Amino acid sequence: MATVADYVTFADAAVTLPEVAGNVDFPISLPSNFNSGMAAILTFMLAVGNGNGLTLGFWIKDAPPGSGSTMIGQIVMNGNYYGTIQELLGGASLANGKILRFMRTGGTGTMKISDVALWFQVNV
Image (cartoon, rainbow, N blue to C red; front, side):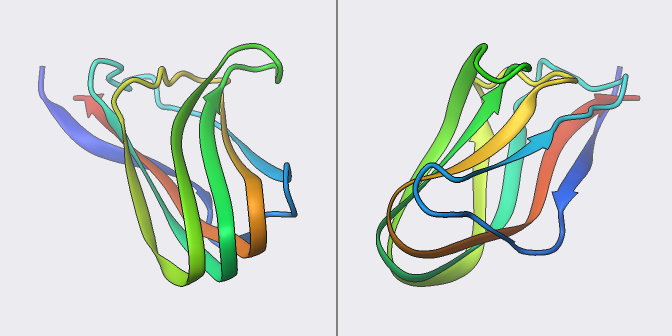
């Protein structure tokens, strides 16, 4: 069976992550022909202003919150930054009903994410 790339989008407009422990959750919805045997790729734009140890973590969480979770990445930023972040999700278990969570976990400065997309393989 052949596979092709597909994607889902979560946010186009910028979302400001609040001070420490502020988080943004996106519910994951995948097509029925999603190929769980292939690694997915998370991409998003990140804007940091006057960062000082500004830390962003991102997870795949089971629903409801408080059940299991897998940290898929963590970034620590200093100064100013605007660019694309791309993370290979080799060990993360993706499924409908799970949650993609971004959480600001430390530091000072401003942090915004936008253009969040999850790329994956589907069977055709």
